[in-house]
Image: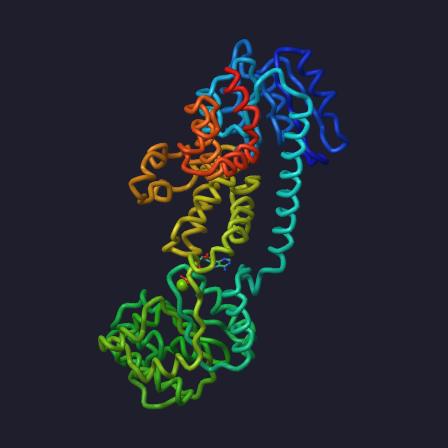
Length: 466
Ligand SMILES: Nc1ncnc2c1ncn2[C@@H]1O[C@H](COP(=O)(O)OP(=O)(O)O)[C@@H](O)[C@H]1O
Ligand SMILES: [Mg+2]
């Protein structure tokens, strides 16, 4: 998409008089206005110019405004679409809002009212553009050794890693699966004096128990069947560097005892050999398990635990730091854009809201998968609700929320729902505000405030008049 300055507004109406009126009334230095009398031409223009705001007539020959709304939102769900009609009906208005329209206006349209409405939208858009720029800037600063985070918990963790890295001999990294323990281990190594040495990784959950010790400590020729030659283990391989023992909770007890000796004495004995070799290694152990519980169950050695846990770095779950969600999302969108050669601009507001209410049991890895999956699926330039995995949409809800759950992917923002509720209450009450307020179980002042907030002042008078 070619970058154009300011806000782009597209007006579609089969009546050229209206187009001219709008173009004159809404002319502003920061607004670029496009017009089309033919809705198909309008849709083509929308595809070409990527308008921020679309004003469209509801009744046009060939294609209805509601279908124009659908097609525009399919191209870019973040577009503000305003429908205009001379044939006002509350049902259509509610349908339009549910489909994602920003507003629904009754013709004849007052110039002052439309000017104010567009001004409001333009201000909101500029605010959002500003905060997007800000987020980009934040992304550059909210990163530590490739670990993204801008929440107090992560700042704490970064500072702990920074302070521990120059000094540790052994360290325990704890946290749920997918929280980023691997990244933390790598950061610890990179910031340690052993940075010139190797980082040797052993995933303890992937090693056959019988091969564990020869893998880790090496073996002498003839130590067991198949040991045809002397072979150094990973400990020796990591000499002068760092040994990263991932999922240490899966290490057999007998091996744990020997590992503790290596840590205490900085020397290693190959399986089947009598001689010991001096090594100089740092050890990072990581686990998603509760090692204290494992100690209770006699599955983990208490002495090894205390040796390792002298320094513990805990990586918080994603659900505990949802403030990191927007930055992480942007980070992954950018990554999958370059991986898949796409130009996704981000996640729509309603998808963002859904993501913020998810519990993320799989933490950052789950988010990475969700965005990767969505980046393949997304039809337009934005990741929307339907691109998220189905399990995120079908959450358990309280009985009262069931009606909304049944609408599946048409889940809108809280504002959209509130606006639709206010509109239907006003319609049911025949425009009588006291009655509508009673139905909504809010005060009249609260109702007036909401009507103003959602630009429903006109609706009420229109309903009263009709
Ligand atoms: N804070 C973060 N910033 C950027 N990427 C992250 C972050 N945390 C995790 N990731 C990514 O999420 C995935 C899972 O992280 P990983 O370190 O393997 O988790 P763990 O080892 O705790 O199971 C990896 O692809 C990793 O790069
Ligand atoms: Mg890991």
